[in-house]
Structures are given as structure tokens and as C-alpha cells.
Image (cartoon, rainbow over all chains, first blue to last red; front, side):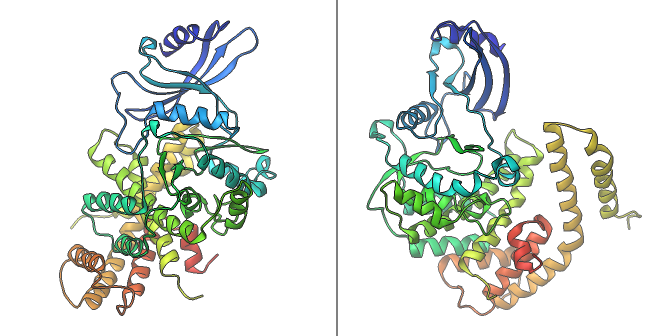
Length: 328
Length: 124
């Protein structure tokens, strides 16, 4: 049924396309879905991805940039020569597919454990941190206008948001309290420079090939803010998948990441990056608790959601390793 | 008094059956979900085995650090509150040892294979 809708949609803007095949849902909650499919074309099939909120789910949740903004940002990144899929079509009401967009499908891997362990990525791993530093610098330099109406975040606002969410769980976590206190005491204040921030630049949202990074995905949490946030977030231990001595995604060093970032003509503030790494570690811990809450109260009563609640303690040990390291 | 086998023995028997007999037969997304389910059962087994001892020690440390008595959850609320207000901090005798030991005991149940935990245990 979705193939019929996609065929009607694609016929309206893709000359020569004769149909759609192989549609399969890749992921989806109640309000947002990702589909893969092939556009049948005499010149060869074209891989495509549909990212949409199905009809009836218009508004995006609190922090989300919204699918229209995501499409715009991806196209901006693509036009600037950054690794990003080309946006082929932004859904219109007459498509009857809901809101969202269709983009080019880029082949590669997003699963961290494969990227960190499989032989086919052996040549990519040593170059990735530097490459990603350059890509993040490129994102921070994108000409994203205020017309995009993204959130504007500061460290102070982020601490307050995290604290509010944590308190709403009504479950005491002394380590989180310690981290909140640490962050409040060291809040560096508003960044001198405010740029576009990707907001979720980490494994899972990066397509990696044997040659390195091929695409940056998922701009859902994009906002304007302190550019150092993206550099701190990708260093959070939760994204190292066991390779804890390689702070950048389990494959590289901070020095390589920073060198790539500065090669692209931007400056790193390592103290600020470390501040955002602590913030990010706490943020992931609170997100784990939030997923557990939704398991309890919401429609998604899955084991996976429930078990993620038991991963928040991982961020507690990581926070202690950052804030109260034990003598060796 | 309930009879044997114990909950721990029952859950372990089910988890072992799923792991050894069923998991090799399942493919795709359900294989992933099955692994999550087996992990959940293993976690419950660890909690049933370790929780009592861990909670008792945590309770004793909290009484010591806070100089007050109460249920475990209430003492954790009190500690959280005092850290938030700055009345207790890392200079408070016993606090950092308490947070470390409590966290290590949580990880022993939640994720004993987590690399940071293994590093801190000193067995890696």
C-alpha cells in the first residue's frame, strides 16, 4: 500500500520513473518512520529513503527541529559539499504520505560494533576522527538562517532542561545530583560564538564506508548554540562501545578530532569540550531514564525500552570516572 | 514458605534454554529481541543474587554519611537533596567512597560487561 502511494508521489517529480519496489520499514515509533525503497528507472534503479510523520502526526515533539527543517539542513549540508544525502523531494499534502521528505539512499554502515570491529572498516578507523572533525567544522560553518526557527540553546538552558526532566522521574540518583551541581558551578555562560549545532553527532547517525564517513543523518536535534557541544557529545563514553581508550566514537583521539576541526579553519576550546562531554554523559543517562518512563506509561511496552532504563547506571560510572577519578 | 526451586534457579533454567536451544534457531530482528530478553533474565538473576547484600551495605554507608536513619529510598532522597543544596559534597567524609561503591554494585547487576566497570574492577 505504501508502494502505491510512493509510486503516485514519485511520478509527479521524477521523470522516467516507472514504479517503486522493495519498500521496507527501517524504524519507526508512533510519530516518525523511516522507509527504504528503490525507484524503478530505465537508467537503473535508484535507492531512496522516506523519512516521515504519517498522516495525522503533524507536530514534532518538544526538542525536535521538525522534518521540514531536517530536509533543509540536509540539503544545505549536501550543497556545501559535506557528506550528506541529497534531498529528492519534500512531501506535499497531495502526496498523502504525511509530512517529511524523500532522500537519496547512501550505502554503508551505521552500527557501531561493526564499524569498530569489522575488517572492511580497518582502513577507515584510523582516519575517521580527523575526518569527522572537519565535517563538524563544516556543519558549524553552514549558512543556516534564523528563518529555520531552530531552538537556541545555551549551557545554562541545557542544565535547566536536564534537571527538570530528571526531577520529573521522582527517583533519587545522587550521582546525577553531583553532576548537575558540577555543571552549574562550571557553567561557562553563553558561547561567544553561536553556530548551527547538529545536536546528535555520534554512531548511529553517521554512515561509514570502508573509505570513511559518507553521510551525516538525523538532524532532529539540530539547534543554534555553542559549537563545542558537538565535539563534546561525540566523545561521550556511551558512544565508544567498549573501546574506552579511544574517546572519539571508540576509533580516535581528541587530538585527531580537534586537528581536523582546526584544519577547517575553526578554533577548539578543549575545556568547553570537556564541559559538554560531562553534560552529554548526564544527558544520555537521563535519556535512558526517560525511555524507561515511556516503557512504563506509554504505548511502547517493549523489552528494549525497559532494558535501556538499566543502562543509565553506565553513565553514572562514567560520570564518576570524569568527576571523581580514583587514584590508580 | 514457598517450595523449591528458587526464583533464581527457575529464571536461570529458562534463560539457559532460550540461549542454548532457541537462540541458534532464530534470525533477524527477533534474534536481536531474543538476546535482549535473555539479557533481561540474566539481569534479574544477578539482582536476586546480589541485591540484598548490596542494599544492606549501601544503607549502612548512607546512615554513616548522613548521620540519620530511614528507609533506603528515603536516605537516597535525603542525600540527593543535600548534594543539590551543596550541604554535602566531595569534601564530606565517605561521600566519594559511597558513590563509587554504590555505583559499582549497580553495575554488577545492570551491566557487568560494561568496559568502564571492568576497568574499575581492575580485571582488564
